Length: 311
Image (cartoon, rainbow, N blue to C red):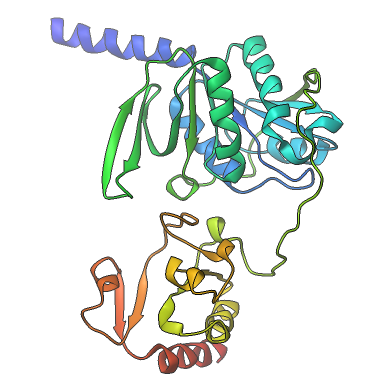
């Protein structure tokens, strides 16, 4: 009887705690379209429990706010527009986030562990005087998270006792929230006063018809075995047949075969694909982690695969 009562009380207490949880997801976007990793962050936020709100800050971001309002799991969309938010500078966004957290009493603040999130959340946490939890791969409860350590060779379960939990999420470890089925209300929030210690000038982006590495479902990646940058054309041709992104190892990047924005792995962009490895050495280390392996000469095997996909 006591055991049943204790379980009942525990369940009731858990429900009460979740009711008081609320998470603010910082939306990453370009004023026209939402960056996919934000959808993964929304999924992570729903696992915390309680209501999920999204903050959309930009210069003319009404279209993005409308897009997020349709995402399943989002209760409220908070919109702030000001010229100072151009480029998403952390020096300008941080006061807005602090002001919004104070106004709505959010218990959690999160974003994707992209360049945007990694640039912003540490500053937010420092201003709140709390320790952030970075690059989490699982939400155990409202205060307990799992993240990788030792270059991904071990998992660490972290219990965060901070009054406000600030965390970034690894996009490849959470499903994207459905972009239909939601009906969040939008609310304008006051823009914070411009700080003025930094200025957004411009950005130069590499344009490609292929998917972005961190959000691609399929990645064709090459290493120094390709021997030159010109030989990466083999991978480009194969990737185009599969609607895949193209990545590279650190060795290939360091050798100058391809630019560093193509690098995947610990010191590059994090991806979580099913690994199909091709190497003519049957003892190659890649076969120890690959899901599928083909012992073959890539200069013969890759063109054959591309031809087969063309049929």
